[in-house]
Length: 357
Ligand SMILES: *Cc1c(COP(=O)(O)O)cnc(C)c1O
Image (tube, rainbow, N blue to C red):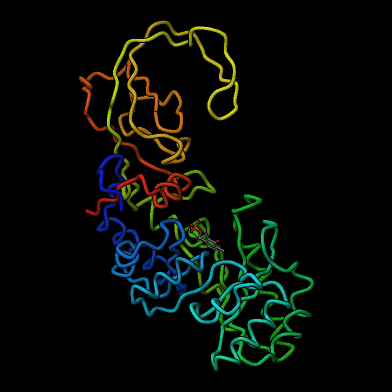
């Protein structure tokens, strides 16, 4: 935790609890269990507790470091490793996570032998690729793969899962989720009963609202919806949830009237790009003390709609404040709402102070 309180991320734990409660209730009404995804905020314990206060019982994170930290802080919840385990970390996966997502027989066999060695049972969710083309077995190979691993000792096949809206930007639909439902039936015919069908993340909530979620989907893994009240795959906010859960504050260090086009021959900026400028004459600008080393600047939005972000270098955020009617002074703090990519960078930045409300 940095000592200087600016730039600062203000985290409203009450609003996160509220969002979690709403999401849990929405899913509970249709028999879906919510796993609280903690990777978006590096599993910071105070935020995990806020999620749990809203009814979240099971947790999921893509990073073993985050999961190990949760254990260190005393969290005894069931935790899902939300990524395919690395072959080199099967031991830590078995020791720290209760279950993991899997698509490779080699890794599942390694998990099995470590679990046996430590006298543990590790749960497996087999990922099925329904079209997003990130992780997962193509549907036609699922039954075959499962028959090969289902009897391995030390592992327990919990179910099938899928991921959408991440790499390929594919939207979840009853059609792609029905692939899981059909595979469950196929497996049943082979004498294999799987309790869990795990749908996608936040973008899947829309199917519940539209009443198009197939009956047999009984688990969703939700991060963004609870944290930011947004569904970025659909580029929209989620009705009834708070979006101002995280607010970024940065201090104004310069206010001047300047030309809108730099003076002199243009080379490359600090990040290798050749910048382009439109001449809008002299205008009033402010510089806030935050930059690309602190946060993903392209994913923050000034809360005052009259402020425009012109650009940033590693430590300076250049703002157009020409249209701002109030008087901005040196030392004032500007407020920004943040989107998921900015959240990822802000929570892992040692330069951004975290303040909990
Ligand atoms: C990140 C992730 C989620 C959660 O996604 P959100 O959009 O933040 O709800 C769910 N499942 C997997 C596999 C993920 O990697």
